[in-house]
Length: 397
Ligand SMILES: Cc1cc2nc3c(=O)[nH]c(=O)nc-3n(C[C@H](O)[C@H](O)[C@H](O)COP(=O)(O)OP(=O)(O)OC[C@H]3O[C@@H](n4cnc5c(N)ncnc54)[C@H](O)[C@@H]3O)c2cc1C
Image (cartoon, rainbow, N blue to C red; front, side, top):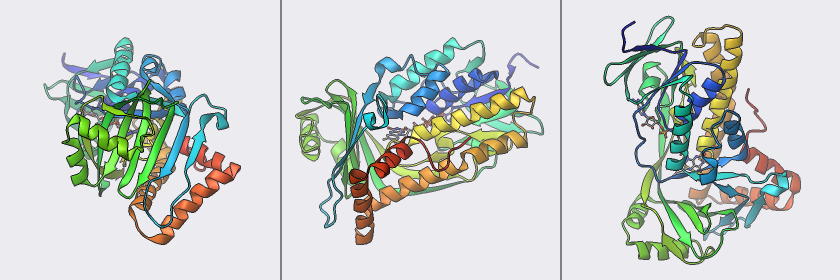
């Protein structure tokens, strides 16, 4: 092997949150890992609410402690029907204490999360070889995957973990097709200082154009995801700070007092993606490489963490049995373990989003009824809270 060829059991491509968490979990499962990814992620002003089970899983392989000081607990989740429709759902608040939890989860700025995870990866250089370059190409042969970086370095491995996002080239090299579809919506993202306390509660206002969600970030600071028609989102994004703060405060019904813009703004066009399978040809997909959808009920990265947890358990067992980590048996085991969770979350978020957008009365009625039952009937309420945090019906491996 030449000096510029590295060998590892597993090569992970992409150092967004899913790739970083995957590298750490797989190293913890005993594998030698090469992580191929460019030095710094692009500027990302989003925040991520990670549910308690994601945080527990990350903590178990040492990926949370460094991030924890930057994260804010999310103890109450409030849903408010802010539509002006004939049939409206009742306001409802879910409390983590009802499930005996300290918090439903923790909200953290994406740049803080990836920086903290990057530090932990650097501290695991015994098992993780970090190559800070983009992958230029991937080739898959009988027994190995070879990833070649932009400068010509080569990494060979038994298994490739594609974590290179929606436009994944590794997924393409593995011949895994995806279905994509878009929505007439754009998310405006920014952080807001406010004069009233948030009491560790998030509030999701459901409007005719999508949710308007405030999630606690610091004391008297919350992150906002405002899903709007694309032209309206762009118009809001272009407003002066004071005018924007006033408009957002109006939309939030002054629930958190006066607003002040506390970060740059970003807009994200809303679309979904689902891969035909999460595993084929010595390649497995984690995070948005395999599934993506609008940020409603904070499911995206939580689903990605569950991908990683399932993969790490399968890899740990396969190593113990001396199986080929990229062999058909292992790759298929992962793909089938993740199928139900990914499918039900993708469909669930899609339906929820469409139920907000449609004026069709029976759908409005159905949504209002579900929320009414969740407010008044304890077992249904508990079921919905638990199902929101992790799949109960289709528990994966
Ligand atoms: C507005 C908004 C709010 C959200 N809020 C939440 C939330 O509250 N909770 C939640 O769970 N989810 C949330 N999500 C979803 C969450 O942000 C995503 O699931 C998550 O960021 C996806 O991470 P990822 O690592 O899979 O992909 P990405 O973050 O896209 O990472 C892919 C990485 O691959 C790298 N890459 C690309 N090409 C190459 C290459 N050739 N070689 C090497 N590297 C490459 C890129 O540089 C990038 O760093 C939200 C999404 C949006 C849009």
